[in-house]
Amino acid sequence: MPIARALTGREPKPRLAGFVRFWDGDAAPIDEGIVLYFPGPASFTGEDVVEFQGHGGPVVLQMLLARCLELGARLAEPGEFSRRAFLNGKLDLAQAEAVADLIEASTAAAARSAVRSLTGAFSEEINRLRDELIDLRMLIEATLDFPEEEVEFLENTRAFERLARVRAHLEGVLERASQGALLRTGMNVVLVGQPNVGKSSLLNALFGDERAIVTDIAGTTRDALRETIQIDGIPVHIIDTAGLRESEDVVEALGVERTWREVERADVVVRILDAGVGISEEDLHIDARLPQGVERLTVHNKIDLYGIEPGRSEVDGRVVIRLSAKDGAGVDRLRAELLRVAGWHADAEHALLARERHLVALRAALEHVVAAEALGGSLELFAEELRLAQERVCEITGEFSADDLLGVIFSRFCIGK
Image (cartoon, rainbow, N blue to C red; front, side, top):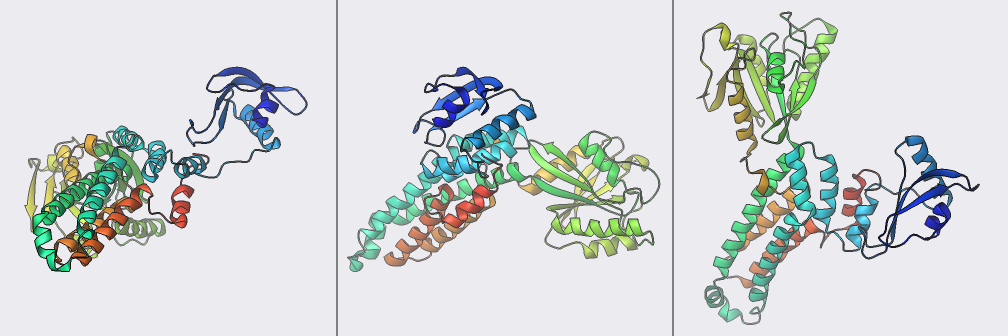
């Protein structure tokens, strides 16, 4: 620990906090604080690690950092400590990613789920799936030298029953991971409608505060306004947009153009109408431009003005919510409908915080398992599909991960972590 000795003037004792002064190159004190030394392999990275804890002022810490660099240290790359922990077997890849997910968690539910992944809950499920696939592969591959017994062997070992259990387990993990992905990233909800139908009022009602300016003047909202709310722990990113109409006002026209760009990126479009006016010719033109593949909810707003009761119904296969953004009647129905559309089951304690690459790997593994079920008595093809399924499952924890994939994953971490 030459840097620690030069910086503190003493040899740090393993796993014992020591109160020290930090010295610069001219033997002048920089600060005083705590030094902690964790000899490998009993450290986060599995290597020798020393921590210097000084006072929180940015100038003092910059001076301390500059002295460390002067003594031969270098700045850590993004995700370097987590990557070292992974490469030294202290964490698997899913746990390492959970470090970043915990730091970036935007809700308490997402943070709790990230902690469960960090402590191995997700990895344990993946390892169980791997072991089930390996056991079944061993059974299948053990009899490949006896092709005349293929069908009888599959029946006697109940291979298809075991494969069905693997499939059910894989589907369950995929469902929980999908829930976790929703906890991690949330969903983008874009409010769309003509001017003065109450988009900004609805944003305020959902948020529970006056976040958007509301007036009777058409075209008040000129640009997309973004706010994030929580519904049952799910981050929901609400985008209030400019009213959709033809306009000669250059600024308003730009706002309308941005509205359509937001619609293209939306997970859910909340289509807002004036409950007393209904669908006009202009609304039909708006509906015709909405992307067909995006979930859509129709809201009839301002029911307080027309004596209409709040409620939910379905018209031509689409959900319609009747509400008043002004007094809040029916807004809870919209919140519940957003969760339904997102596929949330209100079971955050069992969700597995997952990234898109995890979902891709699980879906691919499931496809291979389904393909194996469809093969009937061909043992060689059966075994090959199981091998491919195992590889895709093991990608999640990093057992089969290319170096370029690791570079992409850890480059997205914050500096050092």
